[in-house]
Length: 120
Image (cartoon, rainbow, N blue to C red; front, side):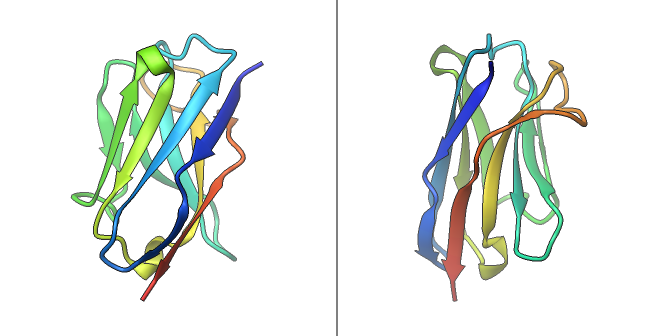
């Protein structure tokens, strides 16, 4: 079955950077869109960024210009480079693998999440 394992979260000061990684197994990977989502306490899970199998990317307005999603199909890994972090970026970040090539869709596979905490 598909397994997604995130890493790279932690505590960082405002203005700092982190890079999240998500390694996939049990999947071809290159055929699937991938995404990063986040959920803050008391909030719904929200889209952060997605990347299609062809490499097209989309971002939430709140992270445009600060975050970059990328993928390495040979390593079955998707990354989220997060720069200029703000306290409002604090959340659990989840990796998702879509069932489609161009978009993640409503019923993706999920990782277990990694905590990102940005102090002011």
